[in-house]
Image 1: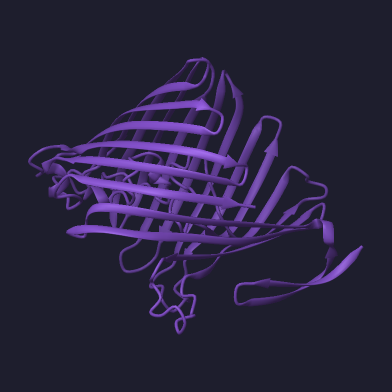
Image 2: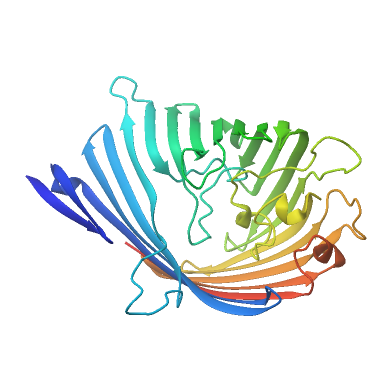
Length: 393
């Protein structure tokens, strides 16, 4: 049976062409999060943010999928009046794309439009799901799926000077390949190219590899080299990281040792030697307090060393607990009086009430050293606390 449907999204009416009713899937999410942070902007702050998403997936035929996802991101109390302010300022198209799979080349899938993208461990490109707004890209992605693994080819328009608020063209291109069954794990190989036009141009290449494996010991080793030019200066930067983990108590507990090194800039040389994390999900790597969400800006070009110990415990299927300790230092001390930024303790407790509803409580304590103050990130010890509910359908 085929139906003509009127789809209603917040503030939008879309007349849908005839489709099979059973081929339409609706998805949604409501995710409020209360946060307390001290200090924040020189004082303390408490607020509640919320993400609301509504998506529709239409399988038009076996080779064509259309997906549209709207979202509203807001802070409770941001509107000037609960009755008279109804502008929905933060309503946005988070994703909207068509996905086509070749009839003769069934190993090739093209996605065109606006989309989330996670490449590997999200070290350089990720959806940044922790932030309420998330991250999505405009452009084209080609997915190649073979018996030996998969390859993503991406071509994204980050900024277009044709748009009123954009000053220069900005683009991201790349290829990210995963080779399955390399020993006990999988090997990723990638090359990314980001370009910005304008009076001071950027033509930067990032080449890297990542190897991740499971077993009685889990691990990940990765490294990236950056070259080309960034903001008019030659680039010679690099990153490497390692992680080793071991499970205990019949898989209910685990400990992970973690080290990341992101090169910093030496002011005595003409080259730009600080590593740039591009469009990464940095929340996954450098502490949950997000003091290094934008690198190299948040390290003031000093780079970063992160030594961490992570503990996880799952006493039962619906409850999990995590405790992480990070020690942060500059990779290039330069004029800093100390290379040590500070230490961070992160604790999280999650309870999954059902397949569609979970709650997470988190606490972070950052013990500040002079390095944090000198790069302008933190002038005293910081406390951060949050409670988040996540409901999906």
